[in-house]
Length: 149
Image (tube, rainbow, N blue to C red; front, side, top):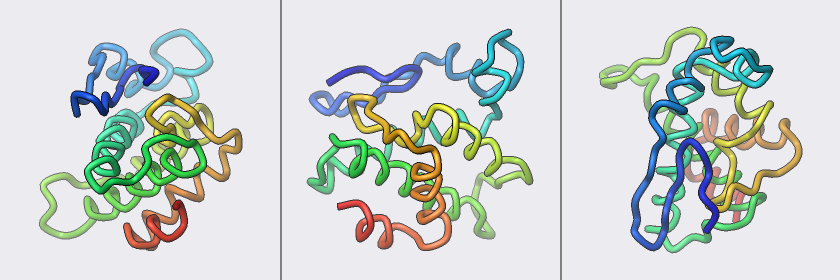
């Protein structure tokens, strides 16, 4: 397994490791003086990256593969999208703001970490990564399981 920064999932220990200061920097757009931070930012972007690593743990618990950018990586993005929809439901402890999905989309298009497999492999197309997230948002978890086998 290759660690992904700032959040990694270790399947052998079933632990999610987080570099909190680096993840916090990802949550603040334009604050770090580099092109990536100017374009990828927002607290929900950082949250989706964390959630996507948790979704790898979910996949492993369900005996699904956690390797393969076009399967496990896109499934992680899709499951993260489905989870995002759950946050928009009445009664949820967390609520999405008007710009949260924009923040998630910027990360999916630019570096795609939220759509990476356990080793950090990401499909090259930002639009394919975005489509996986969108499938989860609009059609839910069952659609993710059908689309990304």
